[in-house]
Length: 386
Image (cartoon, rainbow, N blue to C red; front, side, top):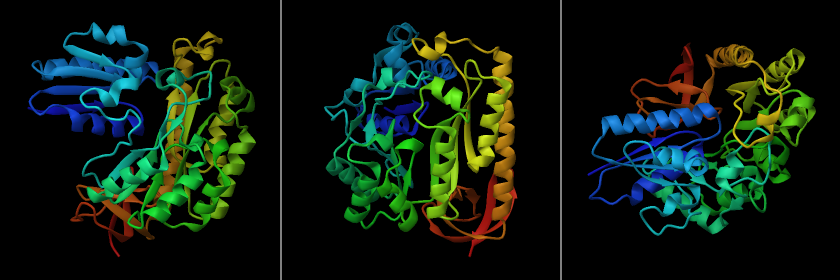
């Protein structure tokens, strides 16, 4: 008997899928589809995954869970092969009496994701995730500390703290990180998932500047580079706020790298507004960009705003991706010839501390050390141990 997990969307989903898989009864065949609802395309891909699972494993029971299942349970329940549909509130209790807020991790993975909170108290006009995940809830320090210890026991070399809005962690994300690093000396590599730039606290900036175990890549939820669009998105930062946050990060940690989420073609976006977002890639030195063509989610304020033609949205997203790829390429080229700390994750491939993808021929899974960057092939670097 077996369990297969198909996970779409955020890192929190991936961590939760691992927890669900551990609790599936040993005498049953299940396919767990952990869905995403951040865009209409994500929901479409979830349906596609369910259909493919039924085709490839017709005798297995199919469980659909996650955000799309929370928002559209009846539509998934009617799909051929689907046995159960469970929303987010019960997803970790499906097969066992787990705490719904229990931290999740990846068994035996070199990089392990540990959830520290879920839900969101903000109401960005384009987003339906707060409807799917509910209000922000933080796990206790003790639960998180114990989850990190379990992942290190299983062989994890790097821990990534994840959630829906981790900078909203009760008591402060920076304080949480400080306590974790003090409590667990084996934790040599701590990475953070997406951050809301306006919520980064002073304690976290202190760590950025003085704690080498906090890895120097920071992914920011920026969404746009035009103040009026940010206001219509109901974001809580301005363009200048975003630029100042990046400047402060880089002043505290020279060599730190920046990732960002950006939405193209938000309703009412003019060409000049789109250009302002385009320029943000350079102004915030973004080297890892997640570009989302605007997708009108049901029951959101943005869905009721004047929409742009779909082809224009796609064109602006393509332009953003092209600019981001060009800047990323220059950054990767700049690393050739340098020495970088690297953790090998699988198949001789891994990441440098700054999150540059690196391949080292013959390197073993979990191996870590300093590597000399010898070249670039497409979107990854080649290296040898220094």
